[in-house]
Amino acid sequence: MNASYLIPSGDLAAAAPELLLCGLGVLILLFDAFWPSLRRAWTPISVAGVVTAAALAWGSAHGESFGGLLETSAFTIAATVIVLLGTALSLLASQAYLEREGILTGEYHALFLWCAAGLVLLVRAQELLTIFLALELLSVCLYALAAFNRRLSVATESALKYFLMGAFVSAFILYGLALLYGQTGSTRLDEVSHALVMGDAGAIGILGMLLLVAGFGFKMSLVPFHAWAPDTYQGAPSPFVAFLSVAPKAAAAMVMIRLLEVAMAGGLGDRWPDLVAFLAVASMLVGNLLALVQRDIKRMLAYSGIAHMGYLMIPLVSLDDTSWTPVLVYLLAYTLMNAGAFVLVSMLYARAGEQHLVSELSGWGYRFPVLGACLAVCMLALGGIPPTFGFIGKYLVFLHAIRHGHLYLAIVGVLASLVGVFYYLRVVYVLYMKEELRAPDGLAIDAWARAAALVAAAATVILGVWPTRILEWLERVSGTL
Image 1: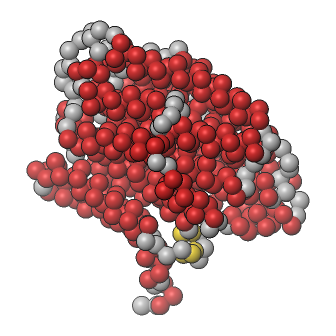
Image 2 (image 1 turned 90 degrees about the vertical axis):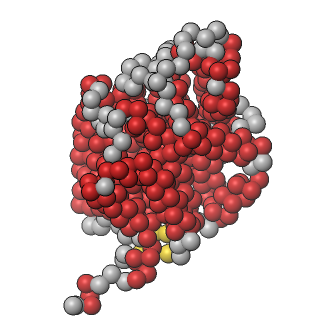
Image 3 (image 1 turned 135 degrees about the vertical axis):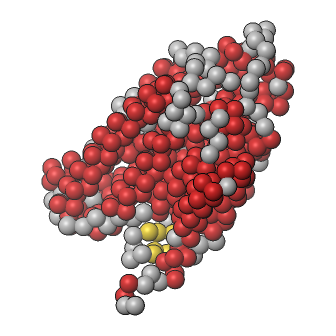
């Protein structure tokens, strides 16, 4: 065998998390075909694989691999852990839902693991074609998972909307990639940035970068690329929505940061901070105002997720070394509180595919004291109310804006947050202040889902009360960039 075709062992070691997730997905699919009696074991096995992948990523040596296509740094490791945390929480919540709906098969877990592999690859990619391939790997899995409960017409409809919008956006991203390559002669982000700094970017370079930012703005469900989110969230399986609402957004945010670094440093004009500020303000205002009038809790959380991505964009208006800590803190807080909220929704609503009215939770804070308390904690954290970790995230984001001379962004963010507090507290009010409307029937509650809810809620409170350790670690991560 020609030695030039052998992959260096160092590169294989660097890709160990992705290889583990892909390989485990293939094994689950094969074993499910021959031993369907093992299906109840796929959830703990998948979660164990995700935790192992996170441990492998944590212990990875820093540096570049595969000729500079992938990067391993403290920042990418932190982002990988956040993505895999959202994956593990969603998998834990899936078992009871899949059993209740009669769709517990290995395909679900295999698609989940392959999607997680694509997300980890997306976080670490430093080259545009690698980013695109990782994006397509995870997108195909997301489309299939959105329609996994194929007996429900609303699930098929929402998945079809998501697929058509996603395919359209993929074309945008590929066209933007082609334009940047035509302008710079390279698909490596560092080489693209260097070429743009050395020469005139021109209209082609600006258009290419705009298309890429628009594409990943869609993945983050930023305004005006948000229309797919409410319908997809409402029709897709709730445990999967716990994953869809956090992990792909976290990975897309990492790519958005890389793209904005190139745009702001590469001579593509001085209006990029204004563009980012517009995306942030529009997402905060539109997301919160539309969430305010929702009566379906999944649609409410979909619109509030749009607003939270607007908060996340605030530190990117003045992108520098101080931006990383608020971004990572906010991503971690959002993953815990939003995934936890959807995990609880998947347990407390029995009629999949129908409306999940907030009013149906009336009085259930007393009927389900532990789950009610967890949902209340997640709502308070999403509203940014102390002493939750959500408050720490918003505080750091607004503080960054003030320190960099963008007081108006902090003011808009605070006012938008006050709007959000109203509809989050409405859920808590219904849980504890309203009389029970109906008795529970056919709920999907098991030990795995309870564990996911408890982990999310407990971590949200603990990190909010004692944030020192996690903030120190994230400061060290930021200091290595």
